Length: 186
Image (cartoon, rainbow, N blue to C red; front, side, top):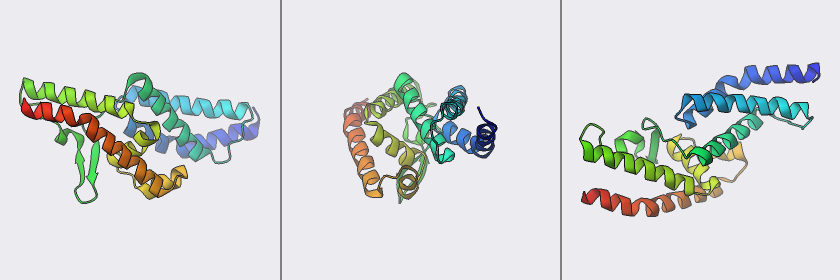
């Protein structure tokens, strides 16, 4: 590795490490998984530069690799939903915490069971979505990111992102409808 490459890596790590770590930790419930992903991303950066793979803009490249690693982790483990994650219901209602949408954990064994079933089913339903739909849904609904921001970051048109989220919402509603009815009966 050349001195220029070492310097480029050092600058990228100093400049992006904090933002990248926060980006990853907001998406993963387990802090150890988040630390592993951060390490993997920077290891891939070093490896790519050693193999002379051209990387024009290191910042966006790091976030793209991080997103891919997070998706890989979801596929391997299934998504871990944090009950404290904010969820954007729609533009008028603003954000609520995910735990506020679930049955109370204090209310009793039936509610605890319903809560666990709902979280498991939601995680399974999210894992079933195509990656493009899941990413847009999580970025907008859970992370509260704007479609304009996502479009700028990914290069995908806003209307395409809106469509992907719409299909994700329709699928999740359909997929969770029967469970919702069953839980309301009990």
